[in-house]
Image 1: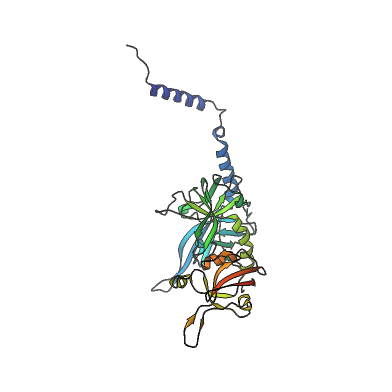
Image 2 (image 1 turned 90 degrees about the vertical axis):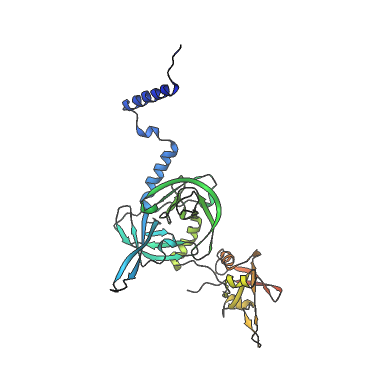
Length: 356
């Protein structure tokens, strides 16, 4: 009878021999085993992580019996250094309701932050710390408009308070839409399968060059932890928004000069469009002849203009109307199409500056 070694035994013996030969060869370095992709991950993390910060949100609460005021931690998240002047970018929902915001740098030093500007509509907050003795390093800005599905992305953040964690994935989809805390639609959002967990919010999403392409903001998950569907606000939005937050402290949107009826009331009345509740005196809408809700002598209520389109783009609710207006600047002329008393009306309106 012919006897032979089992195949598994032979394979195991070969593995042991190879491992022994490798460990005995002192000339072999660990870096020789790194793939080009791993080297890229390491290089991007080492370059970008000094710009990533820990954001702590605390509120002031008065004790029930002693009436003493205490600082209560409300939550934490991630942010990143925008530039060397001390500007910090994070999500609006990370700092929402805070009485005090603390930024902890990679050096381990903590600094109280000042709020420069907030945009609930875009879920972005701009903060500032005064640290002249720190060498602050901003992230280079990429081009989110040049992204394609399948491109590699990296997220750095503080998930579950585990500081400066790296996750790697790809762009899963582009041009997604998500809702902000103010129930406004955030457009052109990046979807990624890079793990984003609670605490990652406000952290940077980077491309293979280490450039900022987005701000990690939310996930879809039944459990609350990463399920492979995360969303990031594109850097193209930041490039437009940050100058506005710096100058005005808020999103700077041109106005028509109207007050609108809530979408919930419009739905109750089965109206598709934005109902003009009133027009402000001296503003473009009034000057163009638009009218709001009015009452006749018998006390019967009559609707005025119902905006159904801007520059030919259909408008079905206030969110859609505001999104279209945000594409313009004060002084731009737009064509407003409305429905009044079953007649379609068109108004050429020059948009005004918002109230300060």
